[in-house]
Amino acid sequence: MAGALHGITVLDLTQQLPGPYTTLLLAGLGARVIKVEPPVGDAGRTIDPPMFRVVNAGKESIVLDLKSEQGRIDLHRLAVRSDVLVEGFRPGVAARLAADYATISALRPDVVYCSISGFGAAGPYVDVPGHDLNYLGVGGAVEAEPAGSWTSGAHEIGIPMVDLASGTMATLAIVAALNERGATGAGAELDVAMLDSAVFWGSVRAPLRDGGSEPAYAVVAAADGHLLSFAVIEDKFWCSLCDVLEWRDWREDPALATHHQRRQRAPEIRERLASAIATRPREVWLDALWAADVPVAPVHERALAPSDPQIAARGLFAADATGAPVPVVPLPPSLRRQPLGPAPALGGDGERLLAELLDDVPPRGASAPDRAGEQRPAESGSERR
Image 1: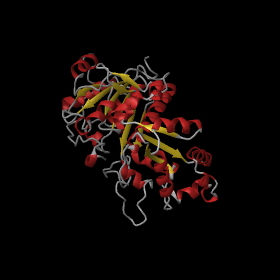
Image 2: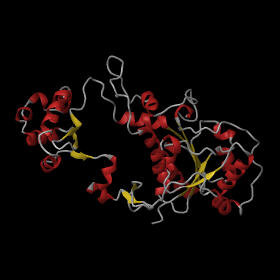
Image 3: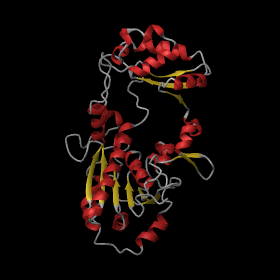
Image 4: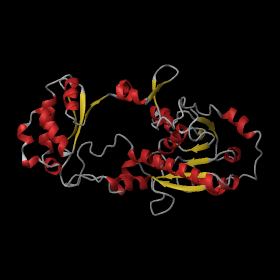
């Protein structure tokens, strides 16, 4: 299947996660993604190789030194043939590298140009570096313990929500701009700030702030050592859970009738839940709890997830050339372009791309003078934004 964005070419100047995740989604929709990397490569190649392989699947790689005149000339020639450019530098760096919207849109007036940064293109925090926790904190989406200090591990974020949320929002904005271009012929300049997604997500579901916690929202071990996740929030599910576990005392206790009441006794509920589930194997519990319509599910180690029957039914993994499972971009099947193929080797497509895309496209005007700025990715630790 070609995909909904078949025929669209994307220049990807981003590194690590938010930008590469954006262009991964575009690739999943059928776009051709050309990854433009500095001579040292995307920092994600060394910081987190498994993540790099996932979010750069199906792309092509060319190495361009945008601090050099030739690198900028080659970028501009590529831009003439591209529909979308995504960059993740700190605000101001793209201009110093002659890769900013003004320069690129002069070469390709209908380009959809998307900048992804931490705090956005303007404002007092424009030059402040950051990661997920910083944006969530500014957005009011995290909360310290009442005493003012974190409990052990409370501040750790396993899944980088803001990175992925902002990448998803950037993809949505790009697709919307392409749709608008189809109607008007005009390109667009898109300013996507990671802070924006953190603020919006934090407004949708605020953290707990009254000293309570989710009572039956936990991962517990069954008798065979296998894990189950419980997400019992609604009152009707609480009643069903009590019925299965034969908690008649709590089933009829008016002090536990509402979710708010149960949150005040969360530690007690979790302890009793863990003790009860530890008495039988996981499959026995799943059969009983699912029959009673309780929101519970098995918890897998990552390596075992592809073998889950529901994941297999959804087609969320495909086999690579060695037969190993690789994740599939989770778009509706009718929109997917599959398979994407592996992540590219650094510069592995450079010679072919230069021959294919550049030899027949003459330079359009002189490249900008050597405004050698920091070619720093906006998406890496202390270098970010």
